[in-house]
Image (tube, rainbow, N blue to C red; front, side, top):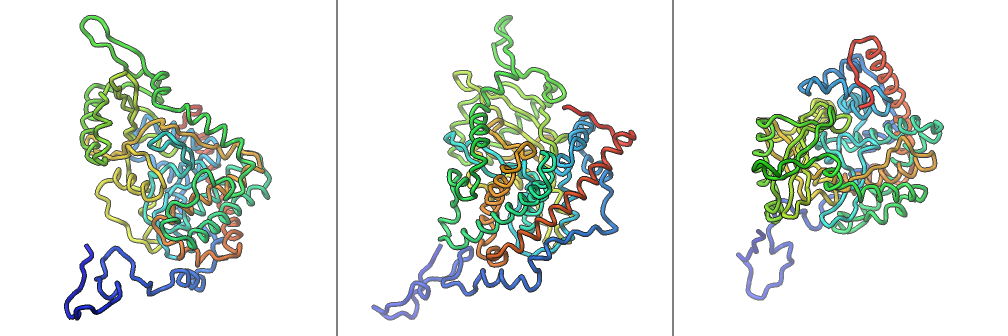
Length: 483
């Protein structure tokens, strides 16, 4: 609460608001005693923008196959062959599943020390469409399993490297791949500079999704986005339930209802005890939601729970889908997904960042997501199942995504600019855009440096992927492909 100071003031004396009111923690001082833009610019003396091209392996770098096996620890062992099979498919897929290995490498690259809430896994396939509370489509980052407070550069470099790998998989030329990385960083830099110039409230909500194409000059991507949007609008709980459930009961005194149909290994029914543990945990989940959401969920009854495999990096984690029906029998499906500690945590101190204390990993994921997205799933929450932390969200919430490995060369750089702009917008919610804008500057020195890093790191990832493929062929690790 702001409290007026009245002591010592004569009647009728006029004083400025700044003199009459106490400073309150959590608000900035007015006028600002410092210039974030100048502070950011000064950081170039310590960490030049050109230095960001550097990537040098050290003697302690983990063996890539050992790193994959270590990342499988505590996952369900019967599912790890699926995860390895997916990672072994292409170098881009390997990158998607090896955020921890890349974090080791990134921690040994130059960093300004400017912190932001980072995605931690900002590769090119982790951007996509989803629905807001009224069913309108939003495009943004959409995976936050690894989110932490850390160096903004890590997200930018991971995005740039992933674009090179995706382009190579699509058959684009080396020049086109590097240009996509260059354009992504350039869009990040220009967007951050734009946000730094705007009034704070305008910057917070800037670059509406309908303006992204013009803001990033991504007109070659329009047709692809329209097709993805049309598909996303059909990607709903009702459609998933229609394909994945069956009716049962209706005789012998058994009420008629819906239940999931076994489709192993991706979707499988679970024992009643396990299903009861999941449904019981939804009570705690309700306590993490805003109270105005509760009357809506009170109109749904829980029908069934099943286990469902998702993602590439998430394969092997415990992940459930919960079927709910309203009074008309219309379905809503929630996903209850295990949340593990971010794989970035061990590497933060190397970059000069503190390892945060995390009370609940599901809460970490949810709050990190809300800090980065303009609009988040309005049913996003967290809970604990059998002592393990989980996040809870809508499943098939009109989600859609562009596969960057299927884009033509003239679309890849458009996609790079779009994702770079989205990443800047996400970082600007937790880091002062004036500070980062002061560092990145007007010229393209940073763009060129990170693009060169991206090519070098893509080469390293291809070598890591080859090691995994060799280990599979030699029988040192087990992989199941095509799942």
